[in-house]
Length: 290
Image 1 (cartoon, rainbow, N blue to C red):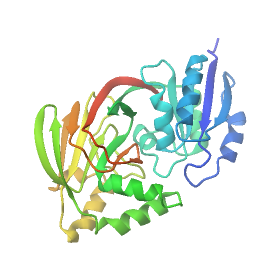
Image 2 (cartoon, rainbow, N blue to C red):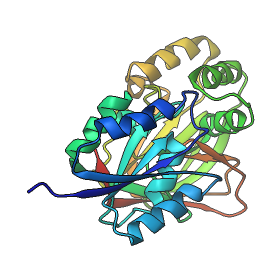
Image 3 (tube, rainbow, N blue to C red):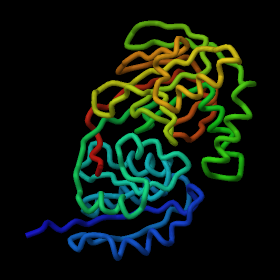
């Protein structure tokens, strides 16, 4: 007898640029017959987390985030250390988490992945006790996340336009870190704490990252000459950034940083902290359909 599965689909109606109506209609046709499901829509920031907590309490087997990495983050944070699995139908501007785990970007294929219900257990991380599943960081990536949040238009083209406009004018900053107890001072273009390999759209900030090795990759891109900007961008997208002499990666379990400026967590910008930032990996803490 085939086990029955009860699944909640949490849909962010404003993520990405593609309409989701056709995807929702496809669920009835493409979902396996042993799956019963319900669809709910988010109405505000944090709503996906509330909906997911309720689903876990009501005995759902999985909650599927239909949206981008921000939506995935909100759903995932309610499932850490839970037997309820996270699933993803990617609809974001970058979909870095889904791309890293090999979750299909095409809706029908993503639904077939859910039908198979293959589960992997991965690491998550926390920043001052706020969970994240893909990346957190400061410097250029946080600056672009902040600009993108206020831009008004979503999608890869908008994100790329902002990044290219800011790339050559952004000023690197100085940071004081403690990485697994070792003090480090760095002048950096960006510092990223990566649980998965990429920001999204195949921009590989941490080409060697693994999501279940019990470590975070501390990725440091140092200031580089302006004439090498095209080479840095090429290496970012062809998965060879770790071969640049301006790039350093450190494996770590715990990191502390003195009062950073704005930062990003799973692509969402956050304001400057007035206290130290504490980051740690949370090994084997999230079940994912992939």
